[in-house]
Length: 185
Image (cartoon, rainbow, N blue to C red; front, side):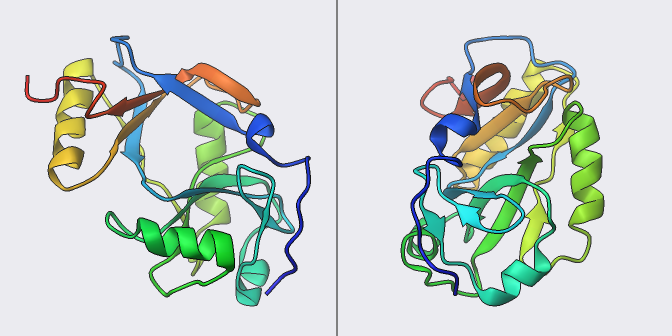
């Protein structure tokens, strides 16, 4: 296990965050499930929480993870939040805990970064690229939200294809969750 440290370089202020969806047209956006885990950022050498704490990841993960900045979640399934939290806080990694990567702090738009992630994470035993799909309409996105919620998931994330990775909140990433949207419509 790697040593635990607190730094100010990788923390919540350096990560990209979305806003709550407020009715914007989502046609042509890319969606994925909003995973209920613990936010984690791999800087090519170490993994960090959104609070700037180093995560004590298994030694093998250091060898398996690529030397690029990856943004994602430690996740242990729809009902595995406690397992993800124990891994994040105490380095207690069960076999269920995976690093689910949804973005990379790299040049280019969202689709460019997704292509890089696909190549960087092929056959990686600990890190997996989150699956995104293009939605033709807002109605289709809301149907996906209903499906995710019906299976116990938290919601979905919509990403504009022209989005570039930058710190802070952006209206090019939108969160759709059950309490924000009437999903029985």
